[in-house]
Image 1 (cartoon, one colour):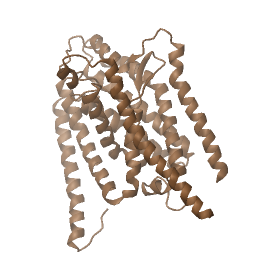
Image 2: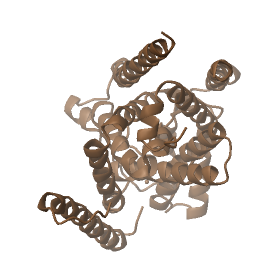
Image 3: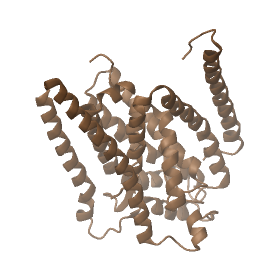
Image 4: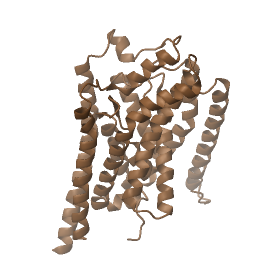
Length: 109
Length: 263
């Protein structure tokens, strides 16, 4: 049991490092790319594949604000989204880890 | 599911499931009629980027799945309290994963879906609701995706992708592949498929200046091409979470049916 725990731990570390490398390599390789959103590019593509098409709705928030959501505010809102998710996962994961610790200690004691 | 009992209390339970079935059937019929009336047209397609008919058709098409998801989650809440924490974590995982915009080899950014974890643990129906919550959050607060294109986005991110993940995982399970590898591949292809569906949805609606095939190809290059490295990352992260849960949350995984009862 102990040894599988250990090999799992190693695997997790390797996997996470791989994920980080995959995620950041393009940033270093493609020095002059803009890295805009793929959805934005999709919209530009509509202009070439269907030039007569006019978007008939705008995001609710932009309509209320009367302008585009400022980039900094948008990144703040995205961070809130990440934060909510991480909070929930970390809370439950913390409880699970603690529970396992207590139950194994009880068995041993 | 089909316990029979004279007890009126129990009978009520049976009626509920029958009612649910009728409702889902009705929703499918509704989708069928709507979907054929206007020609059908779907990942985060921006607000207003789809013609009205396509918006309605995709919304109607997603509706029965959402309904099945609603009942599936209701059932988990009622009968399987233990697995509820995992459901919350799956939802939170979608929140985290879909908020991370990652640079890709194509020179543009995209984000992952995170719906694979929930699909593997709870099936694709339940995930449709989790995806719906995230998509509404993003379309209202972040001006990302859109309310008019919600139906189309739900179909690609919260229905098509999770369904593929779910079925792939089931197949891998049948042929008894290594579970970590199964989770990885299932999540990877589910993520990629979501964006293929998005490309298809856009190409179906917008091809007046070219042909459908060319529009589809160009959309696929933008959406699916950008997504390939991200899909690999999503596969990796899903495996990491599963490893963590297998280590610390065995009772919950058993309750969700991911691990067999006997050790």
